[in-house]
Length: 566
Ligand code: WT7
Image (tube, rainbow, N blue to C red):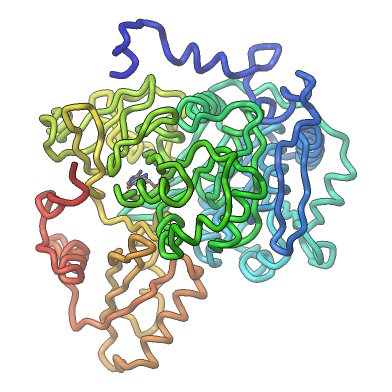
């Protein structure tokens, strides 16, 4: 659509690929694009990462340092017998070792699998097992609390490296610093554009988390959208606030800015309105990519509050992950002098697909238009065909398959992968409308997945853990609308016959879920029910639970009419 609009027949991917340096023999390796190429071009001393520690400490890491450190980690992996294609899982917060580990693994030809640091032991076990991870890089604290007890259940996990104090004292694990210090830097393995590079687990409505696999060529799209949508250019100080455990943290927290040679702020601290405003001011951030939950929290603090700092360097504000209201878009202007620009994409798409791009005023409340090179449509499924709906009508957001960062597989689940595509189009599972000007408007999810504080949570993963509690006979889990987090996880539980539905029981089940799942995934609310509604085939009808909760009528697409409309 956009690609053809200017009458140009030029292949946009040809231009996008030109953003890559490539390897001399035609290979493509993300680690080379993110670090080594800049050293080769004489820009090694430019700051790649400006790390801000929780405790107020700070450290600048240059592209040369990043290239060297990641080369050492690649050397370590290779000497440890980790073959190309093996999975290296990374369970870290926002620390420079995250970048070193991810780029080092890619350099060795391994596949990086980021894990969310707020996960409890159960989601971690599941992902390490399903990913057949051979290596895990984490902290001594996380290892002790969440992984050590699982080692016997993870036969593929032969190497664990720990970042931080106390690493040397834990049995069955190595000290990351010491391990890489002992290895000479290695140049990138000459991976092909289609070789696997990134494994991101994401949640579906039913079944277990899905491992979306991306290839090295995804970096083409990361860089292309980093430039075209976020407007990144050399000299920028860019701040992506996404958690490194999710896809945004990799695509736009690591790959896009580094490939474009831009300096990234990496803040180890947690969200805090004063801290964030001070970072935007003091680090002279030029481009800021954040999420609606954080924006809503800042809005609570107030525009006046945000204006206690000054942002003369700030040029562009963008958002992703959840619906961004028109009010939030405009609030950006009042607080920071620039509107927030909404962008839409998913783990599966690997990079931004629909956006309000930098350099133009956003359409408040709309996700924007398809990115250059992307063909997007609003459709209805009709067997093995799709039918576009009329402008303004509700349908499913679909993308014509074939962009560089499109996922190439769900790990060990070809059937599920194939089911995402109809007639050459990828179906996103999101409901949307397109207006006559070609802007896309988010309406809701076509399925039951939950979005809480920007994190996608599969209800089944939560229900499965609840059912393990000895008193629970059945559980149904939904996203309950929330003013800040967009949704919170709420569980409905039917108890076994002789169990008491009292406050002590409620707390016990909630605590049980929190221990297993981690606070970010576990239910925040729990209600007892005598019975749960079921489909004819016996599945819990989450939609009805949700409708009762919100007061909206239950049912199909029609219940979503009227939300987030143009
Ligand atoms: C789901 C994908 C986006 C990368 C990080 C999350 C929702 C995403 C928007 C937006 C409304 C949005 C969708 C999508 N979402 N962006 N701009 N407006 N909803 O990736 O965890 O795979 O989540 O996030 O429902 O399908 P993810």
